[in-house]
Length: 211
Image: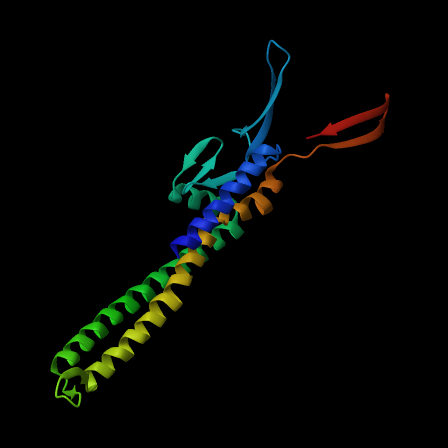
């Protein structure tokens, strides 16, 4: 899992570096071109403090150049973008479910291990000897405690890792990507659009531009 997370982080860093290399702006960014005294033209991509877009990086949201806490982000989504708010809440609920499953699975796994150890300590055994009478090994005879412990360990692993961990990761992904729903579905409604109308008045033709 650690290698997988490092792989995902590597992909994210590569995408950002490629965006910078090829001057591709991302939501909440803009290009700034400067010319120095020697005539050298430099183009940089910087955070657009006037943009309505929200960015997420390094575990925090950023809006107009300022860091947003999770509560601030959630309050903004609740007030301005229902779809993003619902996605965040769905992710939070899924993440909590995953934590509960992981906790139950972990506890079951530990209890099962206790049964296994206790059962092994009290289990009967058979000693094996070779033809020369030398001791060659011992075979434990499984008892109810060992069998119960094995079943509990298997069930705990399935619930904790197979159910809890995916829910935690998917829920976290939904929460941290809620800003994309806001950028795609709600920012465009707030951005002004220019319209041009031509009409006739008593004084002639009138050109009206609305923003």
